[in-house]
Length: 170
Image (cartoon, rainbow, N blue to C red; front, side):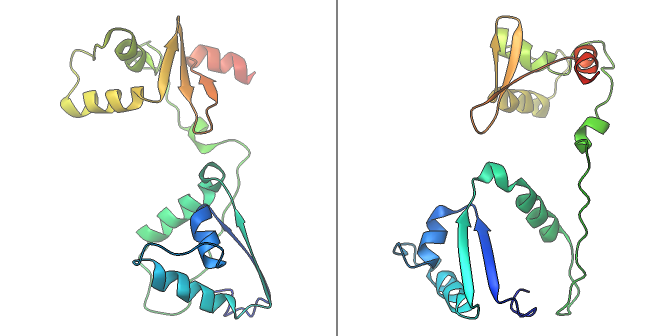
């Protein structure tokens, strides 16, 4: 796309430090499966007056990952032109708008906390629900009565129920 638009200078931001160094020729390509791709990218790089590669962590690459996921789900017509995708940035994260009230009066994290504390699942939990609780519990930990969620950058987020969340948002 940048070549078709005759862009003279290009900034490429990627989350694979290894691949960036391989494309720049700083590191050897040891995986023969990606050699043709690296060579093709190096060939494309010559079509720009100036090209710069920057590494970003995967945590800061969420938008790109989301766009790649969307792109893989959309069927593209057999034409060389694809309409651009307009992205609107909202002030408030979308998931905040779709959190439902706690129907049973228990906090949303009740089952995870119970599993971490005593290894118990809800009474009527299916096999898949048990599997999901077990998998989700891997990123949570309890400290006394408080449940925390670990973030990829090793930060901690305190889990709150609906009433506490409403107070925090005020």
